Length: 416
Ligand code: PMP
Image (tube, rainbow, N blue to C red; front, side, top):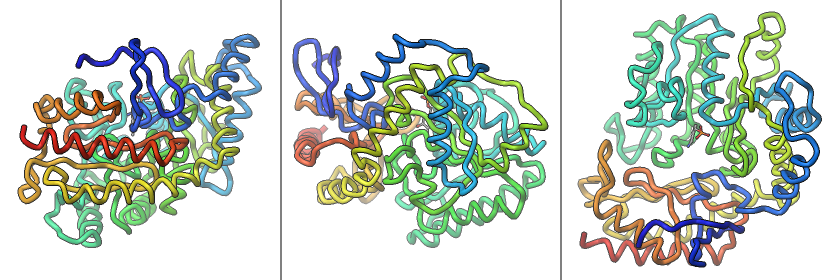
């Protein structure tokens, strides 16, 4: 089957030019949190286009101000935060990179090896995996470290608690070698997103926060994937009770129906920009169509109770997916909220990935995608991990249909 030529989307479904439909089990790229063609968003964009389609970022604009206020109210800081809009998640991380250097006067930044922060040069430099290679040599001053990954422990531990402890000791050691006094920030996805839906063991994020505090280092959570209900709260910061200094966001803020991202900066920190302004910005930062969609999205999340719904979906996904661990191709099922990862292996004992890292997808992985599409299911996978992150509006029977298709397809590709 050729890749489908998509022409339409509605709710959890994508439709191709021949009228076939595909359940979008990954919300596109973990982004369309409200499902496709949400009527409230469609209407907001159309209305805004007819009213004021563009206003320079330096000018005041009603919906831009309203969305900034609403996001500040959602932020995990009692004092609120300031928002700096960008068109994308990568640009949000680019801006955050400039902000932390400007605010601390320090130059180095640390990021995890198994991370993705975007495809522009600075964001690619932060990225820990092979998507940074095309940008190398990217930008200087970025140092990578290993974060916990209980299933394939970089620290050779068996126990998640020990994994968290060893990872924190490792981070301390890296900092010591870099001189913590030169480190502006640590960038971290609070749940590793495209690189495998890795939920850090308890104590890790708290430990990173404590290390940052001790050394005057800023903590940046990249919540481009985890924000806006994906893990059951506005931000993963709230889900895990660990508060960063900056949050970068995109995707779910407007359910991906417009290009919109941004950086949230803790108010106490952002105040320093008043005395030492930082010249930056993009033509499309806080574009009126984008912020109108963002406001409508926040209203929809609230009215439909969708952040909380992710807790229900967490239980449904666990019940549907955990039995898959008995399948010889499934190494581990893991996740939090409406965000699950299914790690596929050739052999559960050796844990050899079904599709190798740093190489094109294996024939088995290609066959799996093809067979899923034939059964009417779209799933985003990175290397050997399937990302199940349905729209928060998905029906439970839709999820059951998707997981049943996955089960059958795993049987079909077992022999390849
Ligand atoms: N950070 C994370 C955690 C992401 O998952 C992504 C996109 N997958 C980005 C940043 C980059 O966002 P964008 O594609 O909007 O530039």
